[in-house]
Image (cartoon, rainbow, N blue to C red; front, side):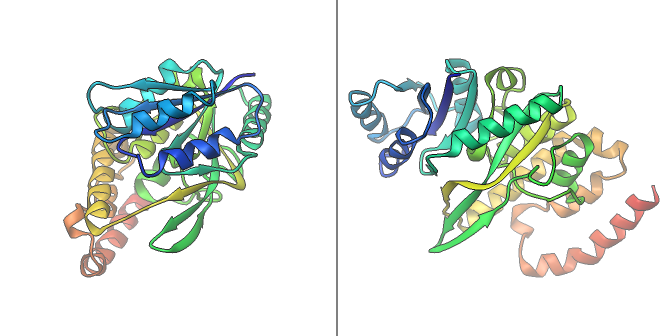
Length: 282
């Protein structure tokens, strides 16, 4: 069975060689390593081309204009020659056993469920010199439907909680061609996709093993933009949330980025508690 490891790349000349080194060490016989250069303005494409000369498993597709993560991922899903696809970002690293563990998890879940399945793995995050571990959603049990949507939109409890970062995702190419990424989003792309996938009948399963190392740089500005994007996701699912008396509650949780400070969190805490009571009564 062929697997495509799909890498989104934009101005990653300092990290793409390290990422491709981890990809080339993956323990899988029939492997395609597919890179989408999203109109980089640095030497990223040249570095990938030099590696292609050393390893024919590596292939490069190039955007003439920048489309963002969603656009790059859709291109990778269209161009993939594998039956199964795993994503990786251009500054991250795989564990060599990643594909073996995640493919086994996917096949086991498909034996028990007729729904399409997406498998995420736990990841190590290195940021500002500190290392943390983020568990994958669906590790305790496969989850889907309203449980996933309301967890991501309203922080409702979910068995095992967990995250859905696309850099840890593995699923069938046919699933990605059916559930494409929304190119209107430049951030929170993974969150929007997971909500739509779950509400469309998909199941999310997780691996407890830490199989991806993510290198992350978060400034206050990036945090603000990320929170604004999550608020945009809430607004996209406005009708769904209104039907569950949860729209205003979700907006309160996902405040505009400029308001995401300690002082505002203290101010909004009683408001969030009050809206939560109305949700439960409804």
